[in-house]
Length: 135
Image (cartoon, rainbow, N blue to C red):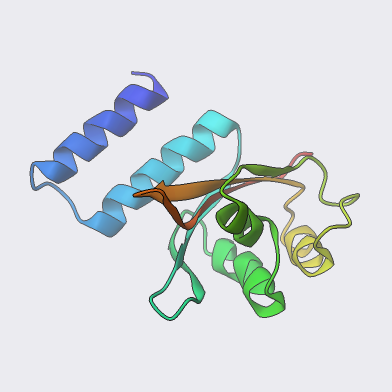
C-alpha cells in the first residue's frame, strides 16, 4: 500500500472510532517522514495563547530541536506556519537564516529539514516538520 493510501486508511479508522487523535497524528507523521525520506518528524501547533508547542513527534529528540525555535521565536517551522508555505533547508550546516535552530539541529545529527504548514479553514495552525540526517 502506498503512503497516501496508508494515510487515508488511518484517517478512516480514526473517524470510525479506532485510535486516539495523538496516535493517528503520530502515524500520519511517520508516513510523511517515510515519504519525504526523513528519519523523524514533529507536529507543531500554535496554542490558544499563541505559543508554539510540539504536540506529536516520532523521536524524543524532536521537541528538543523544536525548542530552539520556540526560544528564539524564529525557525523553519515557525516561518512555514507564519508564511503558509513550505520551507526546506537542504543543508543545515550552510543555512544562515536561523542560527539557533541550525545549532540545535546539528547537535542532534539533523542535516536537512522540510516544514509544511498546517492550514485549517484558511488559516495556519502550525507545521509538520520532517528531519533528515543527510543533506
